[in-house]
Amino acid sequence: MDQKPSVSSILHNDNWTAPATGVFAALLIMTSIVALTLQFTTISEVPSATPFIIMTSISGFAAVLITLWRIRYINEVFENGYKVTAQVLSMSAHRSNMRLKLRYTYLSQIHEQKLDQVITERTKKLLQQKEVTLVIDQNNPKHILLWDVYFS
Image (tube, rainbow, N blue to C red; front, top):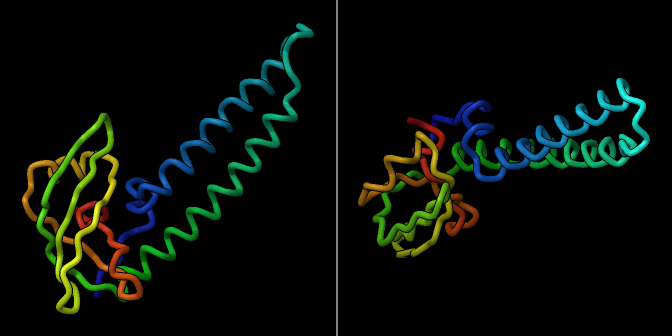
């Protein structure tokens, strides 16, 4: 395929990347609050910032690894994968998550696959559709990506 999603699109819409960076951001904010509190207070009950710094460092490292892995994987699938149309057999939504049960044909074989996806402005329209466009990982046809998650 000739089209790959932008890094920005992956960071904002991927089911793995967005939570990993979100956890890091939340810990960074908490660590900053604790560090600032320690700077401007004499209260002895304020905990040390060291555990927060360690947690933030570990989550930052994990977020970078997950993000780099997902960007590489998603770009590889879009570069070498196959674009197909899938039928939506069922759809359920709970809070900010939807689960699609999809049927698609790849190399003359019919596959049925469940796919969990966070509901965003881009994916909200999928709740009403009977067909969706997928990109299939040629190395493992059970690994699929929703086209509309990365392209409007």
